[in-house]
Image 1 (cartoon, rainbow, N blue to C red):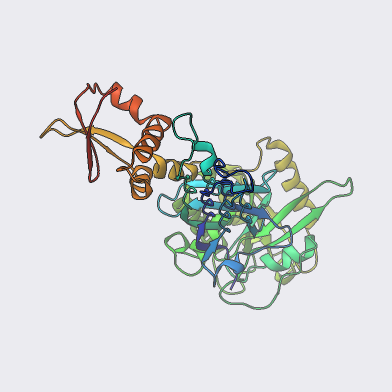
Image 2 (spheres, rainbow, N blue to C red):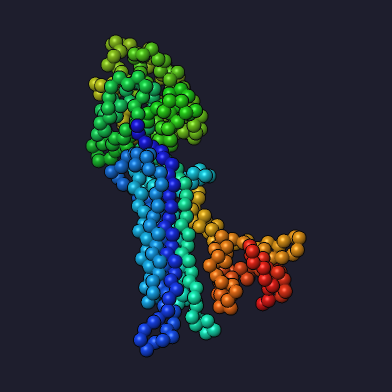
Length: 428
């Protein structure tokens, strides 16, 4: 099965913890702090691999994590940075936040590499916390926590032209005839199972990319058959070629087929009908000489709407030159760039939430309540009973902007500040 979507969980590397140590050398009995900083955690990076054309690598393994940063060491030795996690994907992959379905990045065009999650910062060693009054700090900063995120990967094929049509009308045959693509061709009654791409070359060296978009049957936009999985591939195309069986070999009505497929396109995304369309009336080689009733019906129905009809035979090559030059002319008239989806969500926001704090006033007793993940963690490893520990915690409150926020909320000397299980009186 062609894999054009996957849901995975990615995790950045945790930052290494800062180290607590002191110089212990001969003739230096009371050396100062020399705890090194922790290393930064590894990033999660998505990278385009031009040799890939599916997301099959992410179908059976769902969890991916970058390496944590190394903890700091004594003698001012910094911890090693964690290795980045490189996830290779095919061009055209759109990365979305699974919870909100918002676009994080579109790996198309010039965007070949994207850092989606940044590794946690390494914590500072105790050497950074020495002051004139606290020359032997027994505290170090922990590394920033890792961030975990569930993302959807969607492959949206990058092609100038999309071939659409019901199964068995000759899309794969046409693609193999006019491009270098080699799709499997047989009498598949249902549908080709994967999009096939090829390049149409012209004498002057110019050309365009054409894709056989499979799975378009009635009810495709509601997920019937494989249609819902493959409709996304037509979003980037600039011109649509409808291929119909002009010989009605299987008894289908080509006019009704085009209306049915346009209905599916509109149901999926009404903007798809704004794209220029042409009709390739295929299987001329099967028609009796002079038989053109179906082609006449197609022209009468669609050419007044600006959709030109080109009789062709994908088997013999008849009419293909006229069709391809007409499509090339349409492409030349379209000046818009291929669709690249703008970023709608920045995962670093999640890291900011982990470090954020809130300051609220308790309506019951008027106490100033300060909470936040980073504050809770700081309280867990700081000995506030010791004078040095309390000084260290005060410095933390100042550096994080918490004291400033309390002042903006109108705190006065003697007011109560509550942080989880801790309460103390505020004095400036």
